[in-house]
Length: 131
Image (cartoon, rainbow, N blue to C red; front, side, top):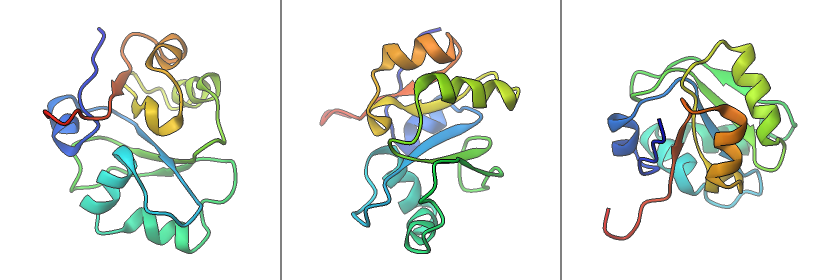
C-alpha cells in the first residue's frame, strides 16, 4: 500500500495515520514542512515547546491525539536525532500499524522510510505548487 499524500492538513484528512511523527527543528527558525503546517494549525504549540527548550534532547516526545488534527497520537522528534530504524523500533513499541511522517522533514528518502517502517506507513510528501 504505497501512499504518498501531500504533507498538508488536507493530506492528513485524506490519509490519516497513528502516530504522526514530526521532525522539529530547534534552531529557532520558523518550523517548515508538515511540522510547520501542524504548528500553525495548533496555534504555535510546537513553536512554544521549542522556545521553552523542551525539544533539545534526542528522545521523542509522545503527545496524545489532538481534537484539531485528523490523526492519532503525535510524536515530536528533534530533526537529526533519529534514524529510520530507530523510528521503526519506536513505532513497533507503540504497537502502531499505520505510522505517518514526511520523509523530507526528517531529511530521509521515502524509500528509506518505507523499507524501515513497512508497507502500511503513510509517507507524506511536500506539496507541489499545483496542490
